[in-house]
Length: 326
Ligand code: ATP
Image (tube, rainbow, N blue to C red):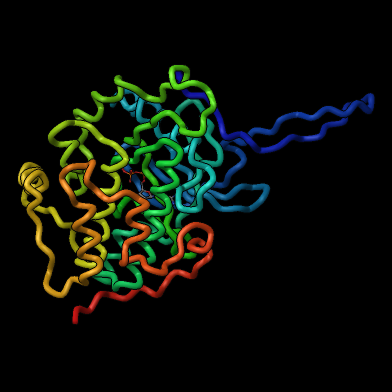
């Protein structure tokens, strides 16, 4: 019931009545404005469809959540977190954009950027590993998107190659903000006490957090606290995985994986490139305060000469090639 349709920046319709009076009526998109096509994927609480805007013929991915299921599984809060977060992150090419939200009797709908390239994980599995050029490109795009969301007061908390989607151009679009933490928007001119973001009530979520074990930061396991540095930890895991073909911390059970993480127990495969190794080692630091920041990473030799910002998103994605040591 907290759900409110938003993102309805659809424009206005000019209407002329019988007396020749002109009125401007706001136009809101709804289910009827889209033609639904094939299923792109399914989540635990959602089905994602390819859909076409009947007027513009533009294609989108539409995520459909069944209300009954959401209520039964007590996921209303996360549905709202995802919507509120995406509504805050609308100006970056590296984040899946939410265009419209609406509902009918049975379902909630999110109209999102279509990512035809699928998940980064799927692409990585096809080649096995990425070479240095590909790792630099995808690493840089992920980092640039992280930089943007942190600047808007959003901590993702579940970054992993499944949550990095690829668009038509094989450029990055980060998704899955259902477990994000919203801080106060740093650009909000109102005093902090009027804009608390999500405060303490959210911490119980951090405490019971079951993301993907392999990318969880040590502070989340030991202190049950997450900060922007937690996303940097996940970034280090992803860079390692792109070059090595597997995440740094992986064991038979979740518990054993957690043990490896808090003991910083991982190894580099033979021939792992040395600049990348140094970068990963500075991201995978147990103390979040000692960990590299986005700025450190951008200046690190692994990304020497690589563009960030506008130029990065104008680049053509490199052809995918596996890493060959030596
Ligand atoms: P779970 O909720 O179980 O963690 P999930 O977060 O992957 O799963 P969704 O975000 O609903 O659930 O996504 C379901 C599937 O649809 C995913 O496997 C993803 O590959 C695909 N998908 C999601 N968003 C898009 C998109 N914008 N474009 C193309 N495919 C998408």
